[in-house]
Amino acid sequence: MRKAILGKKLGMSQIFTEDGLMVPVTVVKAGPCVVTQVKTKEKDGYQAVQVGFEDIRSSLVNKPLKGHFDKGNVPYKRYLRELKLENAEEYTVGSELKADIFEAGDKIDVTGRSKGKGFAGVIKRWNQHRGPMSHGSKYHRSPGSLGATTSPGRVFKSKRLPGRMGNDRVTVSNLEVVKVDAERNLLLIKGAIPGSKGTLLTIKETVKK
Image 1: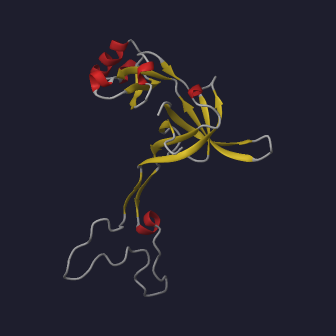
Image 2: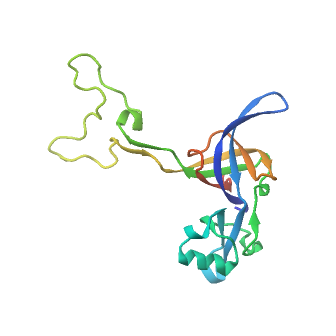
Image 3: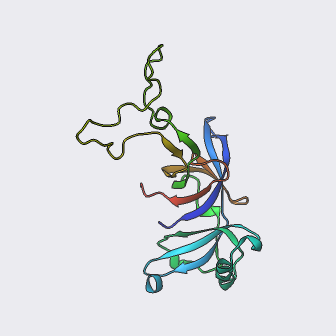
């Protein structure tokens, strides 16, 4: 992987191709990300760059992080993430990654946190069928039988039951960059991506080539 960046989901829109076809797109503010640390095989055992995204005032940064940012003489950032790039040695502390590292037509993988749905039953969470709705049924939206009788006398692991739904780390692979607005650091990505507006995203060169 030679290209990756952090971004924030702004929302969905649509654009039209030269042929008049409508293409649904997700607008992402990608960068600018500043390199806060470069990790090498000699010192750390692997190659990576640590990048910061989105400026933040100093009162919201704790003392250890302030020292980390001040050591590299870089502005305080809200998010810090590591990107394992093959060309990590080409970067130096303080250099920037912007949306123009990608081009229209590039295939990418986008990782983010999906929308949280709260506590959900088996019908919503696992798409199970409901029971009869007739009078006297007493079985409408319940999960159904949970296990066997005396043997084994317990509910098996991974049984699909009600519980917390959503708010999971989700990666959508092989998406296409439709347009790059380098001046405003915007990426227009074909289709939908995880999360609500304002979700932090990691955008990487796809592994499915």
